[in-house]
Amino acid sequence: MIGVITSAANSGNVLGYDFGDKRDKDQRIRILGFEGVFVAPMVVDQLNENWIEGNDKSKRHFKALARQVADDLSQQFNAQSALNDNIKKTTGHIALSFSPKDAERLKDDDYWLLIAKEYMNQMDITDTQWVFTLHLDTNAPHGHLAYNRVRFDGSVINSKNERYRSQKIAREISEQYGLTPAGEAPRHAESLVPPQREYAKMRILAIEALSQSCTMEEFQSQLKRRGIEMRLSQHSGKGAGYGISYSMGDCTAKGSKLDRTKLSYARVERTLSQNLATRQKEQEKERMRITYATKIIGLLAGYESIIPSSINQINSILKSTFSLTRDTRVVAKYISAETKAKYKELTELWKKYNAFNMKRQEARTNTDKMIAFGGLLFMMNPLMGLLVIFLGRLVEDIRKCEIQSQKMLLLTKIESVRSEISSLQDLKAKFKSTEEEWLQEHPKAKPMFNEYRVGLNTLDKGIAGAKLAHDRKTPPGFTSKDKRYGGPKL
Image (tube, rainbow, N blue to C red; front, side, top):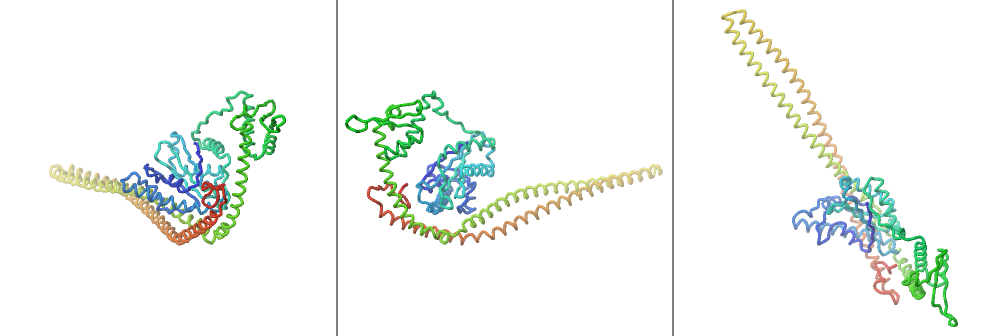
């Protein structure tokens, strides 16, 4: 198992890819689960039918439906992302891939969801919107998870070291569920000799300290925190610097030798100057962002009144109805199969019962023949004639008792099978009645969802107005790349 993590600013592209609406490819998908968003169960069923395998008309219909659902989900993602304007890439995407060796074990949808939810919990992807789909176009089983990096309460899902955490969690889950683990590339540092490792470590720490500094004094302070001493060289009589060296433990090196492209004196001065300009620019952006946030908070303060909190209730109603309908179909299929088998067994029992009637008629015919023969014999030898007639009657009575006993046993079995068929039909009617009761709850979600859509549109218009007012006050020096939906890029 391996998880490949990416993030994007456009949720529509991510969801469109996951839902298989690509123009140049026929994609087969299956939607396994979602949370915090609204998707009608009948739409889920239609997408999971994979019409992409049909004719051109069904393919176009499938792609149009997939695009519609992706756009609808994107709008719901964007409404929640507006709760926090500090991040640009608000949509996270994880591709969970498995070895073809695990394909047989991953045929169960519930098993897929169990692994995906375990992965999300350990990655702390919780309390947010997410949609999980399978792509069925490759031999290697793999699923796609699209999630909102902004949680329901407006906080942001931590993405620090997410790739390393994902590798560790994927290994642990693979061991836990007995899946094939992903291979790891050997680390470059492990192939270095001890002195080289120390220089490599000092170089990495120095570059890290430089990225967090804006002046030479800050750079020196950051280096000391990491156990590195820095020494500057100056031209005699001029007082201008021209060289820099670093030392950590027994390792000492000039900046140009340690890393000419990043740690030489000229490069350090240039980087510090760039960092200072960036910090000033970020401070100005933060000031503007606070001004913008103050305006937008007024809109978001009414979020609960504009967009009803009943979205989870809507989702609960529809998910329950969908689950019950799916379970009812499974039970109905089982009951139909069992009923068919019982009717077949009943038919066989009736055939046997009718066969015994034929045997009884056959025995009666044989007896009549013996009596007729005895009557002829009686005229020649009365004693022998009476004996033959007596034996004929005796054989008939014995055969009659045997056949009657077998028929009674068959009738008992027939009644038992009839009772089982009646029980199966009662069970089917009970499940059908329960399904109808749940389906009565389904229409209640429609007006709530209409209110939800109106609230989304109102909120979108308010945010767009605040964005327009904010963009007009963009300070000099900012480019179009610094602007984003909802404020300047951070």
